[in-house]
Image (cartoon, rainbow, N blue to C red):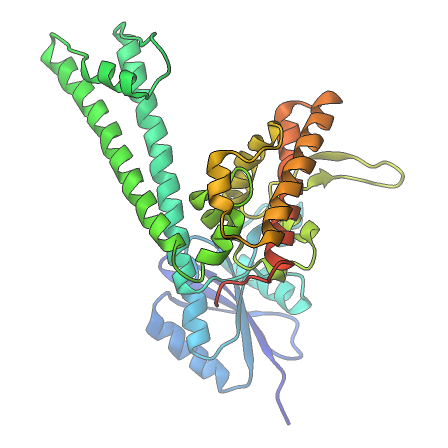
Length: 369
């Protein structure tokens, strides 16, 4: 006769783990704390598995998926839960690791938690590289501002065209200061910007090389058929979402990306607000950036024509249909008084549906787990 399943929830920090344990036929969890080290984790779960089947969970956080991989290697089923979707009582004002572990294990056994998809190590590595490039881009933006503000404070303002063109760079390199301290400051700002540009270019070359390899090459090629997507954006969406067919309907994917309107309705009163912004912010940012391209009338430019060569006819037809539909949608919303950013977010939401259709109906695509 098989014993009942013991449910366990872990609240991990850098130095320790608090485990909330609910054994079969018990209602009050027991709490155990041990160091966050592999040997202590193995010893703890080996002893617990001797009592019967065990299933576990923990909330996604800064610790990543290392704990998940340690537990699955020990043969312990584990789920990583979405912390933003964990039910919380409005009146709770005390938060400790022990309280969190006890609450989490109760919700886990009740089935009130929402698990997330855990990428394999290769996919996580590509995701980290893409996010590294995002960090470099953010740093570059900050240092560009610092350089221009430094020059503006000393009366050096470029007025002959757009910033960061070849002529602007020639102007930047031609700036001279009589004071050696100011000259050194300007040199450091300019050198940092140049260094960040070189780092970004190197990362983008590595990302482009990865996108040419399987299992990414085919779906990235399909996504590049859509206006607003090139290699970087296509690979970002693919890696961040991971497995399009796991969403049975495009609305589920829209909700996962936080592109659906929030709602607070009671009785006959229905109130809808701004988008929820739940889920994956990296993919949502890329989709909104791509949606801005649909302000312009449908057309196949040189670059887009080159990207679509050799791709399946079904995908190209879906991409062209998206151009026509989404441009009409944008014009309709703006014509009825919606601000352009609001209209673009609505276009991004519908764009998700076209991407889902292209990657699931033409030929289902899922990255190897």
